[in-house]
Image (cartoon, rainbow, N blue to C red; front, side, top):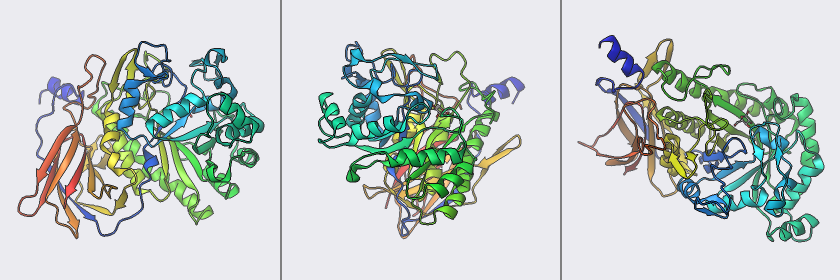
Amino acid sequence: MNIIRQSLVILGMIAAPAFAASQVSISIDAGKPGTVINKNVYGQFAEHLGTGVYEGMWVGPQSNIPNTRGWRNDVVGALKELHVPLVRWPGGCFADTYHWRDGIGQQDKRPSNVHANGSVDQINAVGTHEFFDLIEMLGAEAYVNGNVGTGSVQEMSDWVEYMTAEGGSPLARLRAQNGREKPFKVAYFGIGNELWGCGGNMKPDYYANLYSNYEHFLRAPEKSRPKMIASGGSGFDTAWTQVLSKELKDRTTGISVHQYTIPTGKWDVKGKDLGFKEGEWISTLANTLKMDQLIKDHVVVLDKNDPEKKIGLMIDEWGTWYDEVGAKSALFQQNSLRDALVAALNFHIFHEHAQRVPMATIAQMVNVLQAMILTDKEKMVLTPTYYTFQMYVPFQDARSLPLAIKDNTSYTLGGLTIPGVSASAARAKDGKLYLALVNTDPHKATDVAVNVAGAKVTAATGKVLTSTMMDAHNTFQSPQAIKPATFSTRAASGKLSIKVPAKAVMVVALEE
Ligand code: AHR
């Protein structure tokens, strides 16, 4: 290849020349079903940040953009397709400056305020009732995050009571006056966020004491008491998990961890969302694969302090984070095929750790970081990450199956080497056997020979997401530039082989 052509290929601007396909074989043991993959690992995070809530999802009932009680019909319709199981709200860092009383009662009488993150002129049109309206439209569960940083025990206790109390309580009566007789269902309640940073620069021991104090006063009927989440450390920092799992046994059902994927691994210069070189393709995937070791590190600590496995590791912020250059709103970034692979690789890791990871909420749902959907006024585009979530819907509440990859290829560039193929299999609620495959190599297709112990597979049908470009993405002008294609293949001479294109995510149902 001449130097100009080679550069264009590396930049992803023209298709790479055909490389011979590699070969790997995968064995699935359908007779040994493992842990159920909690559907909540496919959860979402919607923070009042940038245009994540206002504009991206909420336009208000008076808007010309078609909406239902203020929520955009196009966005809600698209999210329904993902069977969103859980939504975390209202933050993030925002949560520790949010005062829930500002968001109830008549909308036009609610105060406006600017929050500590400075990125939003908070109009408070979306408060508790509006959030649950969205949740109920989506058929999702609610993960509400409370305010430790600038709130009080009384304020948090009142919020939980307002949401969950039955008729007799004064706060339940206030809720009814505001239009909601029956309690809201709060599946999870987070006691603060990133207390080591934006939540108040605390040390874990100090927070552990605060947590106990807050949790003690959170009143909710026993049958509908939310599962309480303690806000844990960042990334590989297990010190918080160590202290919280030791000190808060029986007071928490989960400890959260946040882990973002940054192409360069450095917060000051993170890397671009588009137009990146192959070096940042592989480094992004290599960095995202660190999620596996991260979970293992936290699990070692949990296994020591909580051998009964009562405490879950909640990855309640994860996803890609790129440099914000001229972004149209805070933390707005484009989303390409690379993000689709990041999502799929993380799903495989979550499936693998299903015993300890019952919940993960990607950051974030709309217009912020690794979003499902991008909006611009009345326009909306679905991102490659959206399509990955859609393709993996059968894995929600499916039973994971043991899977072994033999002779896996590797993909190497510069000093980095990562597995060529990543795979995950499960028996879904519809009774079918599903196989998910990722080919990380941007140049080479891989032929995957599939063997299922105890079953004869005759065909595979499903969807594949790929492109000639590493940074293929959808824009408001070209919203269908990348979307999944249907895929099917039949066994030949009793053998099933699936050709996974270069740089692809694939999910297929196997016919037995
Ligand atoms: O997701 C964006 C921000 O990242 C969240 O507000 C915060 O919790 C994290 O630092």
